[in-house]
Picture: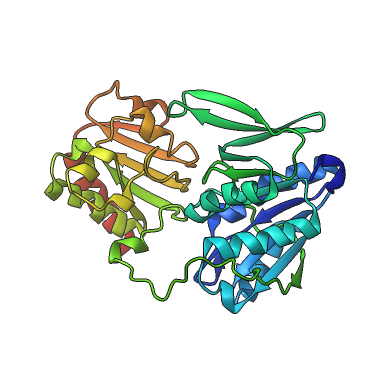
Length: 332
């Protein structure tokens, strides 16, 4: 499609997990709303899966004008080919100018697949969307966040972009959109693989992207035994445990707890960094946090440049005090 063949509407694919919309998908509604208002269009959300009525209602209350709910047996389990074909059919019918997907594993898979099928372009890891006349300018980062790049998609439409998880704030019950049930089936021969069953390790239940509180530990914790203090504090606060790459490589905790450029990008309300110096690769994954508390012996550690509160001290001495004080508050 060319721009003159599209509407001013913005389509957002909102992924679901366990019957609820994922945070990254809801976050994409925020830039979609701004684009739609500037273009004079609507925000259309696509929700795909099985038994998704509750999730669709949540999306409708989170800023989408229309929610297209595709409740289908063939979409009960995520399959790249099936989901891409369903989204392709929705896009061809709705003719949106721009398509946004949250920065999850599924979103990063679907974007290039859709771009190839629709003969357009996909932009990954978008942290900001600006407008320059009739063009959208997608801001991405390179070199571990040190350089910002402006990317403009040409005349091919729709422009497809994957928003970075945590780069935009999730809307909170800001709309009263409508939910429309859609019957969309993947084309014959589309499915190349079929998942019969999935086996998950216990560690896969970690959900850092949606966590409101994260306590992370780095090399400065010194050992796996000391890293246990990070886990204790996270448990008392009702949060999740994060870690830097060195802590992962030393075997103190599983890799899916990793925060940073080669791990997960997070945006909790509270992020506590213990024994983390603050390498660029790690800082690029926590910039969306509302409040950062850093604990490090080195007063010149880069982590203090982004922290709201910095504690210069040995994490092995500071964390036990924090744990005891929080216990007292909880027991009071």
